[in-house]
Image (cartoon, rainbow, N blue to C red; front, side, top):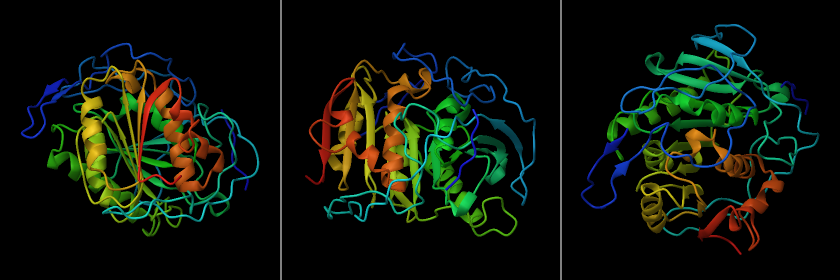
Amino acid sequence: MKFPTSSGVLCLLLATFPFACSLDTATEGAGGGTAPTAGMTSAGSSSGAEAGGSSAAGTSPAGGTAAPAGGVGGTSIASSGGANAGAGGSASGAGGVGGNAGGAAGTGGGGGSTLPAVTDYTKAGPFATTIDMKVGPDGGYTVYRPTMLGQDGFKHSPIIFGPGIGQAVSVHNTMLTNFASHGFVVVGTPVLQGGPGDAGNLKLMRDGLDWILAQHAAAGSIYQGKLAVTLAVSMGYSVGGTSAVQLGGHEAVATTVSIHGHTAMSAMHGPLLQTTGTLDNVGLPLQQATYSTSQVQTFLGTLTGANHGYIQNAGGGEERRVIVAWLRYWLNGDQGAKSFFYGSDCAMCKAPWENPQRKNWPQ
């Protein structure tokens, strides 16, 4: 296969859990790490309860604006996608994923289109990227995607992403653009205004996921026939991570990623990745509660020195690297990414990670 190249604070007292202060602020803590430079995108501003106000800054990429075809609409902003990461994709694994009520754990990833192998998961992937703003239901969503879709029959897994409370999704531009450079179509929600577990947050995420899935069959859509509609991802940060778990039972969701999320549960049927940090006084105990109730194959990783605001201050930082590996392994069969999660010496089993916890995990 050939690929193109280019370079709130809100405190909510929960009835069942004593941990309640959500700090989804762009300025909270240093968090450690440096923000990646690849794939910088348009600047924006956060709103609602988001303290700090400004999104991730970046230079405006070349390419101007171009309205997508097929009624998708909105403003398209071209951004860099990184150099080709090498030839040859990894073979897809044959194993399934963990099921509900203690179902058998999966032993392999894959099932989707293969990707060129990479050796450095911190860098941008092989796809040039584009941002489509003001698209989706009510024109309230932002899509981070490969500029060229469906090349050589490639099917792109869609990701629905929910930011923290009161945040514009543009706060996470660097991280989400990087995911797009690895072939994923990321749909960022409008601002989530509700607290952990809010029904309105969940509705915005479900609406966004259902919209992008429908584009696969929509005549004239730029996504027509180009999405892996049975290999979707539910993902979010903080309250978005909470809703991501709640949405994990959606029939199209193959895996769920909760980043510094709050306590949540659902009838998930795919593997769950949870991340938190040793200095995250919100997500650390609440992610543990989610882990305790999870009935699918689950990995909970704790990053040394990371606080609740780590990923928004570091462009995803170290957590972005392991999330990329997780997505590539489970969705695209990247066997090089398996070592991040499997074995006693896995990448998330040693510094800068600590206290790795694995549930329903094959030996």
